[in-house]
Length: 428
Image 1 (tube, rainbow, N blue to C red):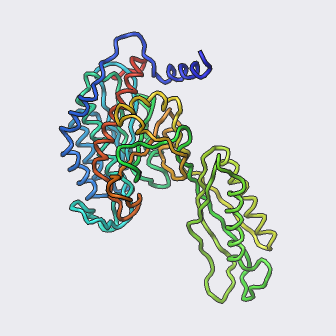
Image 2: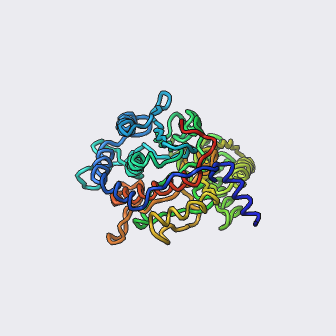
Image 3: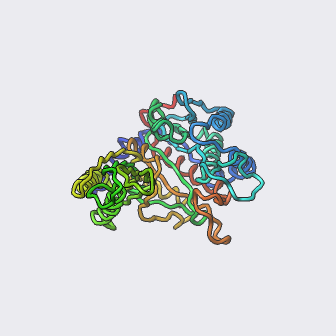
């Protein structure tokens, strides 16, 4: 046996992915799954449209939580509420012994005014589901409905994690993990999805690092107040401009195509009058990285550059770094184990491997704790041409994404539970 094979077996044993002695449950067939999905398709569309019409910003998701909680409870799931803030976990217990896995879905909407003229347009001015969380929630609810119908054939259980947006400086994933979403009973794997404007019916991911870590930084540049712009080190605006340009160059030169990084400046502020040289300027930005090496090394290099450049020009700079969202990491062995489920649900060659992306998602918090798998689901009808991008006021995904997503997630979760078999974690 190869070293890779030995490592894979060790991983599966430790995570509960190999069966212990005993007769495994007979998995529902693809035809069984398709029949159940078709029976609830119209109801799912109505659920999605209601959620879309009633979007809520982070911290204000209580009404959506009530809707989701009521639906889960009607299925017989135990519902655990987050402590003092929006967010719930629904526990679907199979009728056979086994381990637990989890699926994550987001609740939040975006502060964007919708421009799409559809009958279910957002009723809340300046707020819409521009990132696809309405579709995501509906897929999670639909998956819970389908799996509930197969409870007698399920060994183990599934946690449906509905997480809020960022609140009080913490991401939704952080809040749910702190509340024990991955514990009691502990989960062996977590699955998540997001929408993309790629082709409907396809799933997209990268093995290993998929989405970038996103960390913020703040720079305070100090010069000297003066009406004479020629005074050395006096113009904090000029100092800040030099530092911003140098930071961009630093990141470009110290990273390459095999391990890229990206810096973005989102805010700059300073000065009081157009005829007076500013003595202070501050700016904020985001550093995105796809490796822990760059995530650790680059902030140190950025601080050294900012302070050194400001001081060499007669000023000073204070650099503050704030760790944020970690890398979304797709465990390669878990992905290898789940490939047949992608083929069963979508068809062959519908799982597309892409390069790691510089966008971010706090799903990385779960991936830090347990083997995880996160993918993008295409939501664009190829016959309709280009689609509006995510977080655009014109974002309008094809609603068939819902049934595609449910079918895929049901196959993934059932296949994962089947491969876990009977383990030390009891469903009771």
